[in-house]
Length: 496
RNA sequence: GCCAGGGUGGCAGAGUUCGGCCUAACGCGUCCGCCUGCAGAGCGGAUCAUCGCCGGUUCAAAUCCGGCCCCUGGCUCCA
Image: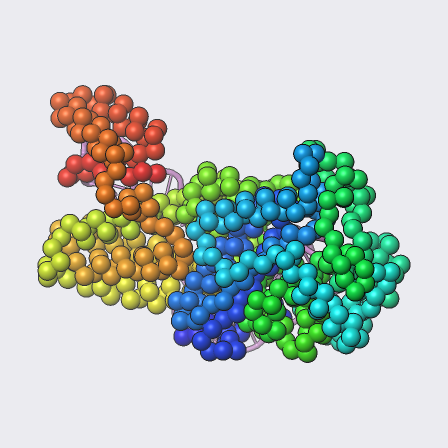
């Protein structure tokens, strides 16, 4: 069984074979640090995270690089009146974004390179392109001449002649072809452009512009173009040719198309062998969710409100390249799915813990189901990272466990243990869900002891027939986020 | 206009690459039953889809071919 992925370059599902059979070079086009991260970004992160985890499960050594674009007009537009600078604003958003990533239990990338720290590499790359005849200088700016790269348009399947011009009017005047794009931009940033992106609390555009970073180059002082960074950082931290390049599908053109052109022109080698594009998340009004439309739910809000596991369950409940809509309803459903999964896991753990490891009870239907479910999960992941199906397989495992527990007076120890292992290995290790988080820290917490104290009191009230009082106590605990369930063997509870 | 991707039950969403195991998964919702002081959780059962429309190929089509309708994204900063 081998991994197959849908390659945007060919628009076909292909067998995945990295250059080096033991390792995978993975690059993800990260964020421009000009706004808080929203759920749409999280969709990309979580799917890339799961790809990373699955590749490791398959035995590959994964080198994962994810950039931050910390030099950009939109960042300058966020400069406030309190004396901060483009660099300060960017650094502050980088911190927030890394915090958001941690909150979603993402595996760390090996490197999070920033544009501001790679200007020398960018300048080198631009020089190479000029030397090789693919780029030209004009008034201190440098442009890539798209007519020199025959395959220009191969990713987005477009003809440069039919494309609309890229860049501002001033740029148009100095470019040879309308579709040429900037590799290096002379001078600082334009205050009119900044003004367009500014919010309420912004500093006057003229003042903000003063804080924009510029660097020396062979063409004079200036700033790197938008696309060149990813090429430079990908080559610097990975290699001239990488295996997988992932990004949002909104980046197909022009960003990724331009990356291919400038990278392959510079090295003569294939830039990325497999291009995977994550579909944009739709907002409740069915428009795409995006920073520029301002219709987003931030990662911080969502993680706080629903918890990281429900958020991940939501994002993984749709395959990465399909349409997905965020709404209170779809999110609520994801919460239910996650709850069912976690309860199933906890039931299996509790049941296994409650019995002697030496018991000889065997439930053949349980034992047979588990390898089948494992196979289903692996097949789903290998089929272009079909996380929806993978999640379904795990929910099937919940069914199997529950049925076993309900239908048998004596439990199958080994069967339950392998179910628990499957939850942990696939749900935890691959999908990055965190089971039994609250109870995970070993000893019994004070909170638990106090909840038990209250529940013991409630049992006394129930025994005395004071149901009204008992229900009050249960409601009070519920209000504090403690879910109470009565069973034949007494109460059970869990923290929500 | 050009490029890309979609339209599957009340909702959500797999399956379409390589047609048959799809009388269509998993979940949510609704209804009934078991259990329960009640509730929840769980279990059992039920409800719910001629897979956008029309035509074709085939022993066989959600899956292939042709036409049509509708939707979304990209072509401008955006994961």
